[in-house]
Image 1 (tube, rainbow, N blue to C red):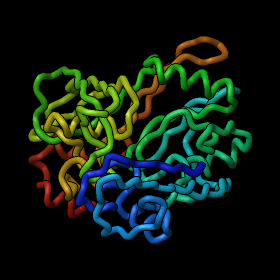
Image 2: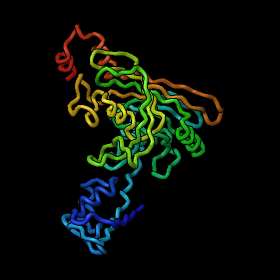
Image 3: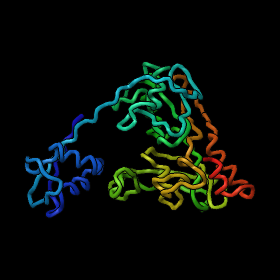
Image 4: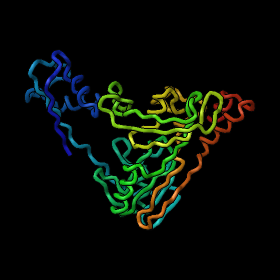
Length: 315
């Protein structure tokens, strides 16, 4: 759906592209440049240049066309089913797989794989068949998919009301103290780096994450992490906020991954919820995949092989 944003009360002398980027943080700067070239950003009803300096009384209108929806094509991609009944299916999403098609990821997604086996999944408002919740591309683990609209809404209510037991395994940088804690810090779009999220005190949405130390491993800590809300990148943002970014996370942690990791060490390990039809509680578990198990094995036996030797052996 096309959206038009009208902005007034400008900062006199500021470039129009920078002003729009600041006032409409959901639109990236590269996208703003495209909108300017297409004549979709106007000042007082006239198409403008990105370099235009704002004057008192200017009114800026930003037309944001709806992105083209990628075609949903069933693809025979193997998926591992952990649980299934007539209402829903729980699968293990591997790292590197996007949950649903979007710009830049038109196919090869979990949805493309699911549609081969379940062609009649219910469509939500964003054209994502069966999807109730999401995992980041490079996060592995459990995800539940609804087979009908009634179940989709039921599960969404459980997530929204905090009735779903979600537990992640996360290896983080440094020694986490205290051993248990609650991170209560609002999350919103990073005003400096538009593709990232951040703890934002003004305008952020409430976000709560609980953690408990599972194991200390030298300069790293293995955590059990339970997000009580469902904000974008919540676990990664909150752990980085307290000074212990997820190992291998090159967005919120070190720019270059260490320990031989090719992705963030974050795995959706446990998922518990109430089955909509039978009203019975179910708890499902997904063990760590091989790449993450190998990292823990090396950290637990550091004297057998150096970090450099181990990383070289993984190439």
